[in-house]
Image 1 (cartoon, rainbow, N blue to C red):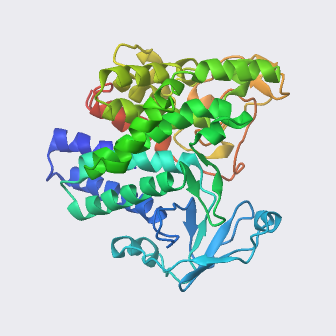
Image 2: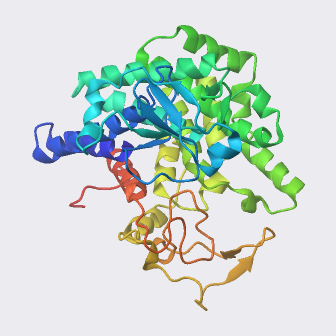
Image 3: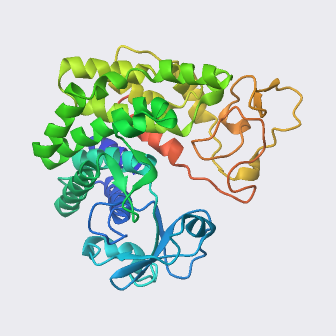
Length: 418
């Protein structure tokens, strides 16, 4: 969605609003935002909870999560291994809040209906952070072209952030308790997992509050909470401690620092700190957020991904990056995205090391078209042929389009003619 919005913004500037390519980019951007908004309404709980994903009636139900099936004004927890183990199989919860008419075509066009819709619960901070920064960018670039959509963006983001505040800085699920990973409160920060997560999660929560103020144009509870977290809870100071806490954690676990990297957190850090540096006007806080972003540089630079580096440069203009490596990333991107396209294991020209955790890595980062195909959140150094869905899986190209159109809009990349 972010990539498509920046494509639209770039073409508006280069070709004009009325050009056919610009209009096509607008339509694609709008549909992407509608899809995100549907995830914020499809559960029909009416309280701000966001679904991880949804399916139409009759589609195969995965066995790796908590799913609810909508029947009228109720949603029933479907039987999966996880729902049985958690003791929630068959429970009923409210589903009486209507889905906005603007969004219904996304499933009715596919032959679906509200009756029998299935959505996945136990949503994590990954989805919430991605949605929030995307809605900020959508509000910035699409409001003029589609005021009705923007009204829905304002309403949805306002409700979501209020829901998190009312839940004690947690995303409260069907059980009345927080989901597994959507926690941004001090109680979580004082747990073994939360000690390291606190640095990123504090930045996420502060970004949500700044985003809500920017998009809704209101302060109230958002500013009150923001000021409390900064002045009384030290959240802004936590954002700069990522590297220190990661290093301490690796020492405790008896492993090297880079073995403890969760690569999916790179995108989360980019989203959170990019949003903060984009929206914060106070020079003291802005400097802290820039310092916090820089605390991720040693980890992010392992991937040489322009999708991470371009927002980093936008946020920290005093920094520099290796643009030749960025150009190589684009030129050697594996455009097929078919997971069977790479055979890494068995190559004799690639130095391999075995880590303390037991799995193998290449000793240096291979070019894109020599790496195994995967989602963006996998270790690109890992020594294997396939990942995720196996050799018949085709992964998305959004990792490329996200980076490319941000690069085009901000001038890191030239035009197509260049």
